[in-house]
Image 1 (cartoon, one colour):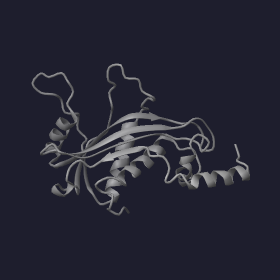
Image 2 (image 1 turned 30 degrees about the horizontal axis):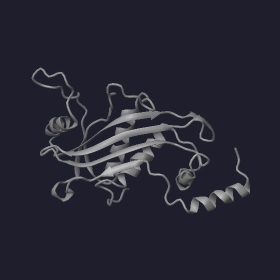
Image 3 (image 1 turned 90 degrees about the horizontal axis):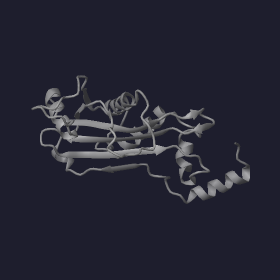
Length: 214
């Protein structure tokens, strides 16, 4: 629906005081990165985060979401000239007759050893819902959520962890999204486009944030 000129001017005035817009990410660098090299990384394919007992989720994970986000991280890392070694084998299985799935740390240690990389990047997808509609108008917006971890596989230290979750909103729903909405071309994104933007925003607060991308 088109916005009248006076309404649009009002939006501009209101948006001027909203800062950089809503924050859809959480990021922490809990360990001293200078002690570890992050120039070579083993990349484990993202998985769909299994539901916990009684958990109710705001969205589902569409088919192919894990591969899409894994590929997006791969492209962003290699664009910064990081050596990325992708894990393409099966998920490591518990040993000794254990039935519980491996923890993230156990997966990182096993796959890091197999790839011969001390640093491993892995993550999980919690939400990947496609938009219903077009770039100009929707019945339902895209929604994406995922977590990423950078683990030093040799000593088990968590070097970086970040969470991204966003359901795209219109300006009428959230005026603080003004700058972000126009930066994205004033249109409704697909789920893959939304996750691509989310990956890039996480890279801006990652251990590779200061590395210039091609």
